[in-house]
Image (cartoon, each protein chain N blue to C red):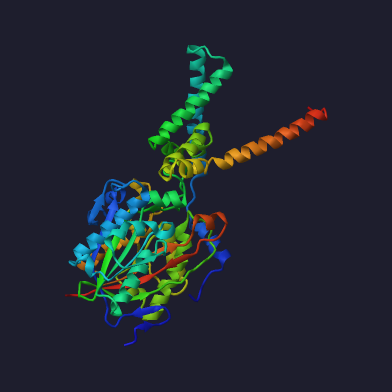
Length: 338
Length: 153
């Protein structure tokens, strides 16, 4: 069997499994529609730390420890960790998991990090380079606002297309040991830039990248939207969702019946005033490790395409008037009876 | 994908599907919130003139100081951002909005130290207002001087 599939995909000959997963979130996420599904809700936004950055790291460490615990292994069995966050030089990752002493590949994929880390961890395990690999992603409203936008106490009006950064972290232990959820394959996304410059409309920036990778996934695996129980993008929000569905429709695929967006699931705009939805590396990670995994285990979903989406910008690139390119990574998950 | 829009087509489409805030509602809210802040200012002016027997010039100074103090306190309790979120420019434009834009970075960047945190970053938002405010008043001053010398004014 050929593992390389089509142009951008892999279909593993010996597929790895999600052995354990965790979702650790902040108070606002806990009050959202998925509140009951998360493993842990931390009411203190600083998580007992001094700064937002250290707090985000603490969320990641907690997610790592919990995922390891739920996979029923010890941290010494983790051969590689793949982790990333939104901060400059991914400092949340560095400070968060330095004490865990895990061999680490630090990643930056903006909010697509969960897809990137699960992809790489799956490849590593499938190739036999690790018995257990850990994939992690985190974000924090405090550190993200401070870095990309304004101080939290500054008064301004957020546009209706803007999203709210999810505070939290998700962790996934990938292993060859059988478990109910299998990583059948991956489709790695390219950077796609349709020239949108509005960083407060990230859904529009990222939707083309999501469309591109989903389109390529269908082609590479010779499947159509009907073959999936759900296709979940990371954080396109209401605006991006509409655009994605149209872009794919224009290319012959109607995903409107199976498409969901983690950012839309994680908050309720009417009561939580989050506007277009949630965003951040943690957004897709914690929705996968709560709602999506639950639906796969108990809710009858057998095949899910998980597509975290990232908007690639920095404060400098934005001030210099550059566009906001997007990237998205597809992970094909399947239910397996064990 | 085989059927991709051009960048112009895409940006045009994005503009169509992106919801916009209601301009009229924003104006109405800004009017009332900004007006309320100014009314409070006027109230303070009348009060200090009446009770503390200050002259008009000193009373206006007292108004400025009091409004700035109030705004900084509200910023510290994370309440001022809610006023601006609702009132938009009504919260942004009065001197209280300016105070909020100085106090909020001071709080946020305090963790980065007195010099590189507060010292460097306190004017990240207000800085442009100060710089271009002074520059434009200088230019206006020069124009005024020329007009006076020419005997126009």
